Image 1 (cartoon, rainbow, N blue to C red):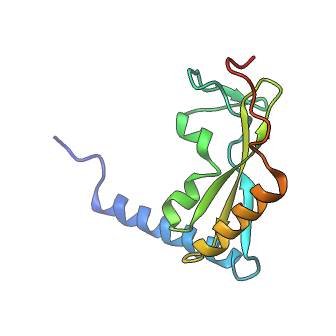
Image 2: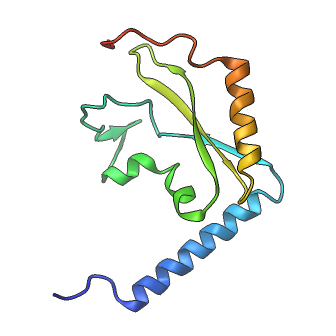
Length: 130
C-alpha cells in the first residue's frame, strides 16, 4: 500500500507545529495565563449528533468542534477545561485555561481559586436534562 504521508509532508507538519509552539510561547512573554472558550458553542447532548452548523457557519468535519483545544494538545502547554455552570437546557458550559510550559502549578492554582470563588458545581441540574 502506498503511504499517505511522505517525508516532505511530515517535515512540513513539524515546521507548522514548531511555528505554532513559537507563537504560543510569545503569548506567555506578556501573560501568565491564556483563557479561551472550550468549545465554539455550548455543549451538545452526548448522544449527539454534533451540530452541523454553529453560529450560522457550516462545520465541515468533527475536529472543527475542538478548534480551541487542538493547538494546545500539540504544543505541550498545560491546559485545563474549567466548568462554569449549565445552560438553560442543563448542558455544561466551560472555558479553557492555558499556562506556559512547566507551569502546571500556576494553572492548578488558578483552577482551585476559581472553583473556590465561583462554586460552579453548587447547582447541578436534575437528570434527565431538558
